[in-house]
Length: 410
Image 1 (cartoon, rainbow, N blue to C red):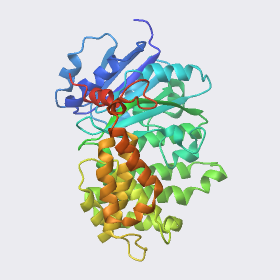
Image 2 (image 1 turned 90 degrees about the vertical axis):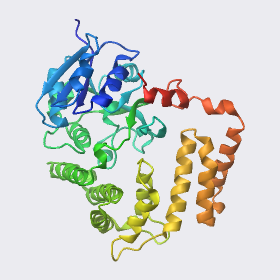
Image 3 (image 1 turned 180 degrees about the vertical axis):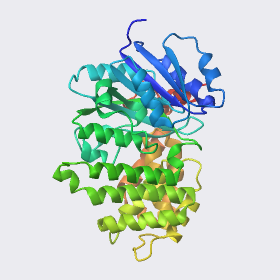
Image 4 (image 1 turned 30 degrees about the vertical axis):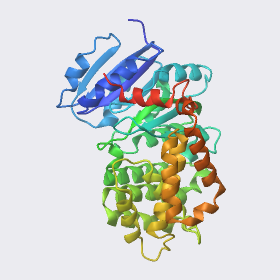
């Protein structure tokens, strides 16, 4: 077999019920010069049998004793023969143009070491929740400072030159949460040029077993990630100046996870740390803290929203001004969700969410943007063809096609 240009690495542990779909999404790529390395991190389920059911010479199955996913990915990197490497978790999916889009774009940027696209998030039924367009960040390209607050791209939507991965030593095997952000930061510290390409290339699937739901483990991972960055020698002054804001953002994300998981004391403590580190997040009439907690709720499936926000408000840190009542927060959430559903083309969901927001808080009626979106969504429903409109950055796919592909039936 000729040497492949790209190596796709799927690390998996007891994901036999998902991995067949992940494999099919790779084998179905429109660009075929790749190898697929499946690193089985000690699975005890039917993973081996599922992999064996595929008859494709590009697949290489590698088994190791359980060492967690960072070590599994590094095993794949060591065995990879491609010049560039892409990653895929066993419960996520590639869209058919993933490799073609990223490899073509990277070839036009010979100095670039990491290229990231966007992702569509779906729930366990394949319904679109939202899109992640990382190139809409305020920075023209990803850099170390931006890595402190957001990921340049989900791990399933990046393409990295193998030489850069080898230079930084791959993933930190002591980290199994926030390990992707740690990798991006170390690449940035090493001088790796990064870029975005405006294309949605992967599907991130939210379900009950996502590791992001493990509140305590994620808290440890995020704090360790930030500790490592700020312990690095010769950090630029501009990055050092962001330390307190970066930790505040980290505590806010882990507070949201904790509240969602029912760990209200941890959530309360992390929220107190957020405000202590960055008091500007609490304002007299609006709270970026509450906006962050609402934004996080929009990314989750399978939680009772009223229970989540009630836990936050009933366990709000002592001495910190509480910006809203539960009724106001639920109104704000409904309006935020209305914009989210409009953004993914789910126009039928918009009017009920608009009503849920304004009936709880009439002040939203004064917001022209809110009213405008509700009216536009209603008008879109009068034009059935609009329901199949091509979604921006998706290379010709419609919303219905993406939903169907996300199911990936058999």
